[in-house]
Length: 198
Length: 198
Image (cartoon, rainbow over all chains, first blue to last red; front, top):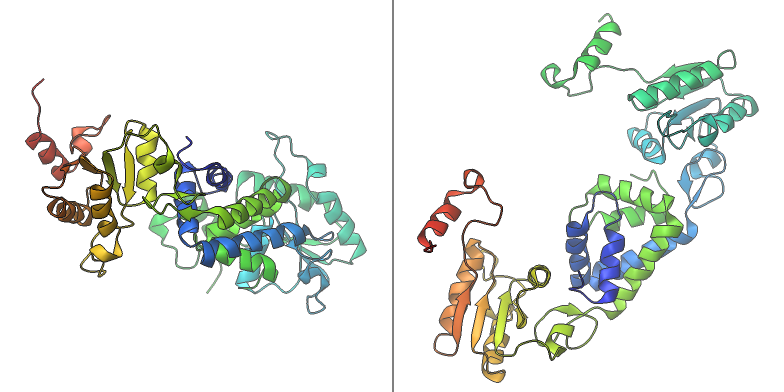
């Protein structure tokens, strides 16, 4: 397919590698960008260049930022002693949007997976265990996804940290606004098992 | 929402303006880009910069390219005398992928629309009429979308060009691989009206 000049074809091919875009939607996006080249394409090129130069992982928690130690780890307003463990940076951002957790984070960078040969060494689990000792952590909150791999990883970490600090995990149950009729059986039985008196 | 540093938030906001991406998928795409900043983010920034500098519209047909006159208009292999009229550049590329039309194109840049106050002057219709005279065009093929606005525009152009050249339009009917059960009534009745002897 070489219906467009080489520069533009090259841009379409790179855009098609983004998650959520295929060849067709990449072509549509590139045409949109060319139509708005002053308003959108040039600023986007600059923004990408800026991020490609400045973006880096926090050496402490694995969050993405523009400094060696991320804003959250560097903030003095954050409670010490509490660590929230998440699979990746998107989950950290989701927790931050909820704006209820005032401690610090630890990004694993994935989950344990026998199929994909991901062991503890491939994740930031050794670093987590070191932080628990070094930073006098009293509580580790496991905010891992409620998937099989996520829960396997949660169990592994809970075992590793046993006796070193208290380990908790997010409650499972009916989501806010959720209708029972649309929930899966697993969620309903988890919510029933964890029922509370009102 | 300021869970990420300013540079990264800025990139997310710009990405969310792309067609097909919303705030959530833009965030996911940006995290993907940061994870692959050497392999994908930096090349993408360069490719966008290159296109933002070089991309321009062909002064003859409205196609997108990197030269004043696009490759198709400049090509000596293209048949003169035949013009294929399309709504926008994406349609021109779709025609080129089919690789059956050997003439040249004319991109209208939209369709007539009473609701959106788009008249002939807002499109490249005057330029089309001028080209028909200047380039000794014998046939104008209307490859407009089979929407109400597309067909209104096709009728308008056919009226304007009456007596100056022959005007044809793409056949309507059952698409290749199409199953009658899944086709809308309009397509089936158009296909029946245009039936051919076998």
